[in-house]
Structures are given as C-alpha cells and as structure tokens.
Length: 340
Image (cartoon, rainbow, N blue to C red; front, side):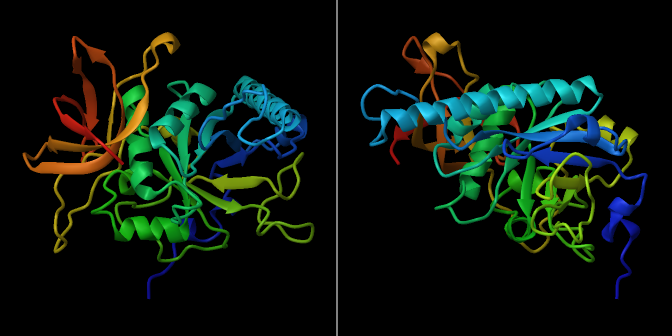
C-alpha cells in the first residue's frame, strides 16, 4: 500500500503552503479583515459566464420584459464594476490575480472572446477555464473546451488553467488521447476531502496546480477546513503545493504540461482543435461560425474535425491560425466547408 505524502493530506495545515481565495459576484468579503491572513497569496475572481448577453431593451427581449431586461443589464454592469474593484484591491495589496470563465453550452470561440473582453487579463495574471461537468446539455462540451483553450492561446499566446472536479479530471485523463489539449492544461483540482491519496499522478498531471479544498459544501458554522476572516462559509479556499515565492514564479502558467507516452494506446493523429485569427477592431469584428475542417496535421497526417473559427477575407482569401492536436499554433492553408 502506498504511503500518502504530506501534500496528499490536509496540506493547508502546513504554514509554508500558499493559500488562494476564489470568489464570484455573490460572495461578500470584508477586505481589511481578509487581508490580515498573511498566508493568502492570490485571489481568483469569476469573470464571464457563458455566451455574452445581448441587452437590447427595446420592445420584447427574446420573450423577456423590458423591465427585466433592464434589471439584468444593471446586474451585469454592477458585476463588472465589482470585478474591476476587486482586481484593484487585490493587486494594490500585493495579491496575485486570476480570473475564470464559467463555461456553458454554446459557441466556444464566442465564449473565449467574451472572457477576454470581460477579464482583460494581463501577462502576469492567471486565466482559467471552469468546466463543472461532462454533461454537454449543462456545461460546455469537452470538445468545445479544447476549442476555447486553443482560441485563448491564439489571442494571448498562453493556454488557460483548467478548473474541474475529480470525476471530470479522471474522465479527461482516461481519455487523454481524445483531449490532448485539455489533458495537458495545468489542473486546478476541486475536491472537498481532507486527503487525496493515490489520486496523482493522474494522466498527464503529476500534481495539482491548485487544490480547492474548502467551500460551502464542507464548511459550516461548526466545522470548516479553513476559515477566512471577513468572509462567510461559502467562500472557496485553495491550497498550492508550494510556498508563496514558488507560486509567484509560475502563477500565470500558459504552457501545456508534458504529454506522457501512450504506451499500448493507439497514438491519435493530430487533431484540429480550433481555427481562428486574432480579433480585429470592433468596427470590423470577424464573425464566428461552425464548420468542418480538412487539414494536414503537424505529423503529416490528414485531420478532419468540427471546429469554430473567426475569418477575415483579404483579396478573396481567408487567413487562419490553426492550433493542432499537439498545441502548436501555426499558420496553415485550409479548405473549409460550412456546416454544423
């Protein structure tokens, strides 16, 4: 039987391990009190949620009332203001800053653009794709999540971190030949147990980048793994497998973790995960569409995949940046046939 390491069992009890808080717009925070906890090294805030809303409050709004439309617009505006305020506070007090997109069903390129427009991430800030489960009717499909991650890479030069729970991480790891981008994103791991013996290594992941160990699910007035001053029981608390100095050095991430050999598994051909170009100015914003792509992968193998792209024509020809199955962004000439 394997013996659990100190990092597998309640690592948050070790004062050398950095603590990171994450919150969404409904979490109340008393910042002066929270900042008295000097172990708190970083703060990750929710940014965008699914597809961008269309707030046209003239007449009916997709069957909604004008009054409700205006209420939702005010909520959205206040949420963005709160996001920017928290960002200023966190960075002013020396905290590392990160931001996440809650992934929903719908066009992944549009969601990636929405996230970047909302969060406006700087080069030293962590970007996170939040996948809550594998039901494509409730959450972004894993195939679309790969497109999302590839488009973020195209526009920023960095891949996001993947936030997900144990069941979803295990599924991705077991099918890493299908999810060759997702299975290599640094893992922000959510599991509300005191120990995670024998979980890692998991697929390509040797360890978690962050472990979300405390939330409303396991924190109440009587018992809580880690209480954060100035917050209620619903605040999410995370631990890093390293101290503040080490975490600061790698915080922004951006690279894929190493891909392990497939051994007896069939090595898949390179796959198209996204086809996109960096967005132009708002005045000539390219549109997203779904299509089928036939291309030559980096290994010289033909690859066909459903994908999303943004396109801009010049002299009747469209130029694209292609993210291949190995996560390499490269220019390519492709032929696309429109379709679902």
